[in-house]
Image (tube, rainbow, N blue to C red; front, side, top):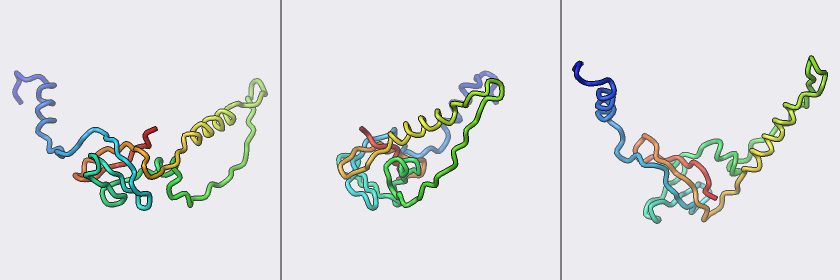
Length: 134
C-alpha cells in the first residue's frame, strides 16, 4: 500500500476498478402496454420489457395494484389490551388499524396506458417495476 495515498483515495480507486454493468441507469418512466403478462414500453416505445423475461414485479407492487389477487385474506381475532398502571384501554390496536387503512388506501388499479417507474438491475438487461406514477 502506498503510504502517500489517503484511505479515501485508495477506496475511490478500488470502487472505480470494480466490474460494474455498463447499462445501470437511474429509474426511468415507462408506459404499460399490456397487463397479462405485464409489458412496459420504455425509450419512446423502442424497448418493450416483458414480465418474467426482462421485467421483475415486486410482491409489494402486486399487492398494491391487485395483481395476482387470488391470495385470500384471513381474519384475525381482536384483542383488547389494557395498561397495567392506568387500567385504560391501549390505543395501539386502533393505531395499527388506522395505519393499515392508510396503506390500503394506497392501492392502485394498474391499467393499459398507465405510467410506471422502472429501474435497471445489476444483471444486464433486467429491470424491476417499482411503482405506478400518479
